[in-house]
Length: 223
Image 1 (cartoon, one colour):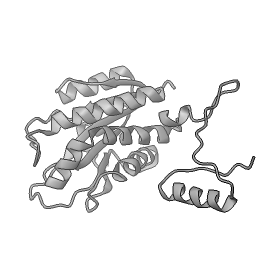
Image 2 (cartoon, rainbow, N blue to C red):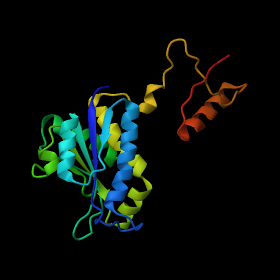
Image 3 (cartoon, helix red, strand yellow):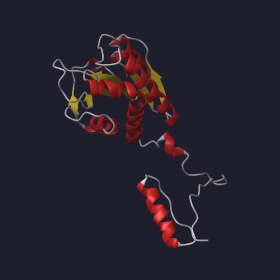
Image 4 (cartoon, helix red, strand yellow):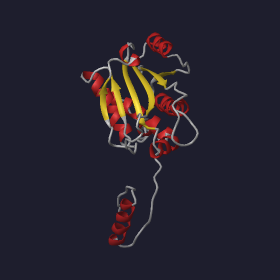
């Protein structure tokens, strides 16, 4: 995979969280670190900035030759009264921009608790959307100015970073890291786990039903 991804986490120290004595910059850097790790394991060429100058970030992204530029932020409102939600900001809501934004949105919104504000939003006036040569996906990952949103972000930075990365993988049609080694290569040893052996098929079927109800998969083998 030769696609280049530039990660731009928030530089906003002054955006304080409702809980945890923390701020947007601190938590978004944690989300970014998880996103970078996942994308590298998936085979992408990834660069993450630690420069707080937004204009320098765009220069770095363009010089890097990024195929996708991902800005990572958490959200807030003046009234602090929304019930949260994920938002993806894009230069325009058409073509590949919309398709890429939708892939990331689908993965991120599936795990974030808020729902009322969820949407793709056209933001051609945002500098990181209009000045990057790469396709820009600007993530607003849940609202940090409510207790529920703040607590969730602080506890789930890894999951959020990986969700963004999964969206990128799915946009480019790249196998997820956890799926790459799910099927053994020819000549490799396959290790299996057996759970239970029964003299009656009815007992085996009842055991299999219990496993599936608990979220596990399996099948019956007759010997």
